[in-house]
Image (cartoon, rainbow, N blue to C red):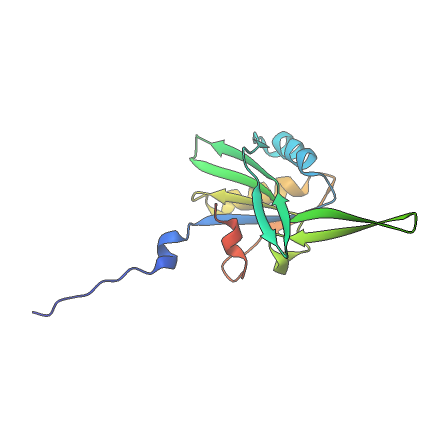
Length: 158
């Protein structure tokens, strides 16, 4: 009888299943969280932590709001996809300010916010949520994002 060897792939251990929704809007994070709470009956609140990184020798911080649906055992996260940093230079009595925008998921820089839903909601439920998000007047559009081919998807694991 031959011995069978089993191995585990590190990526399969660390990778969690979640659904990712992209939102296009000009709203600030706190205002979007408020409108989502109102429209889709969530209870997003500011998280105790941000996603903090050092990119290109500067510190960036992406805001996170979270909500736990204990009835269905889903964890929701509203994540900003961009961070704005103002650099100001004083040169000959003039103040020059430039804004540098850094993206959490650079390959999706047209998306302003992500909603990450950890758990196993059925696709009908996700489509219903997206429809409700689209009804918010300040939201341009919202849709499901396939995170598997993203190069920067590791930034969404926290």
